[in-house]
Image (cartoon, rainbow over all chains, first blue to last red; front, side, top):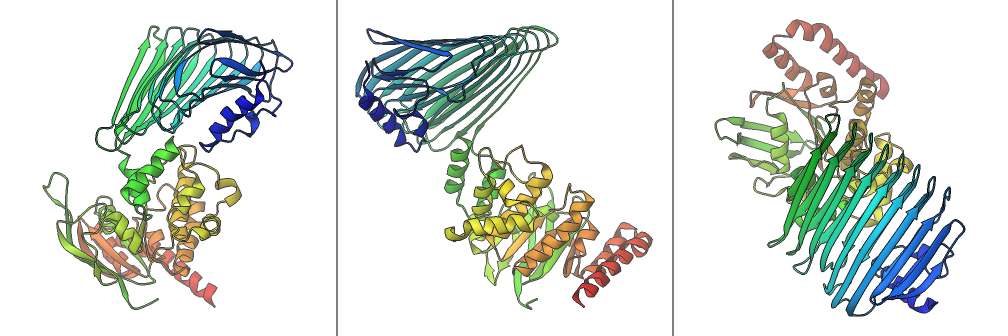
Length: 316
Length: 260
């Protein structure tokens, strides 16, 4: 099952995209599960974490349990890589963070050579009471635009827990991408969800649905969605927040920049309150770069294109 | 101070968006190289509009703007910046993800000098470079910090003409004192300042002033003379005589004492 050369190759392919992967290379001792296409190439565990993988016909079931009270300084690393040009990869992560645990989970999805490659994920994350759980997912799909990627995640955040989601899709060419994350927040929990996506050309079609359901009293959430579409790329952001319990507070913030002919951005914020004590808000802006920002940079000598590129690069 | 004219505004007029009136009406004045020239006047007089027109944000419907003797009326903001004009905005923009270092450094032409210029500029505006360089120019900065970073960015750029649009607005009194020093430091670095303000105590640092009133120039000249007109026009002559000019004289005497 162990195949450190392959996992190293996949990880190093991430390095092409200016990422610091030093903490995730095979020699790093932290907990990890690394796949090469539909085979498990590396699993390593640490005390307090159970990590198991089961290979299935077109993918892998990954079970992760963070035991009660476990506090990890190193992130748990999941690397779902495919060096092949074509194929189907299906991943089923089942993650449980027991009460009073604190962990960061870093997922890298790398498909550097994709021409007709499909990656699907169907994940469940169960977070207990008084936990801190940070989930970072970063994708790299090469430059050919041949990837079709469809991750779906359901997250259940227990009482008085903090869940942070950082989903970044900004490097290389994306291809077709459809992301869905539904987060159920229970009593006194806090949700901080950040999505960044960059459609760079007409091959890129990105759809993101980021939903928070505030099911427990005093639960709070913020969804921040930032996107840019240039060169004919297309991005749609669907930000949902529902306040379904007393004193819940939520906000959806969506900023999308459009540049070049044929590029398209859409934002659909959907907010709902079913209790008079809820306070749910949204804010969205789409279109060209803010003129105050443009003028500020042009007054320092940048032309409009340079200023726009700098603003997009830093926003994402 | 050089006796050369750096900026010459000739009879410019700017129409309101609804094209019903002139926000700025046939304005003319000169700014001498190496000087601090203030544009003063009440709220709504057209001061900021005039500043934005010089920067190229607004374009006049008539009249010309000359910079170092060259007509720049039709040039873009970028082209004017490349010729040596910049503006510190009254309400500076905020940028997600952009570091203070990158924002201040964006106008430095020689990329080898960026770090030196950024650090030096932050020190001039009394911000610790080690604390601020990695911070972001976003909503986490206070209004005062953002204003100082805006000043630092124009200082690092080293333009020939700096337009300061109410750089002091929203500042507390303690900070205002240091702003006088910052303006003088900018002047010492060889930059000419066009200071847009409606505060007479800030205008005191200027060598010359232009008083705008309802979009027109009432008077050009030395600051004290212009202020007299301002007070007369506003019906504040007695107050001006009692308070403003006492403070003005103290200010001038203070400078004379420092120089001796």
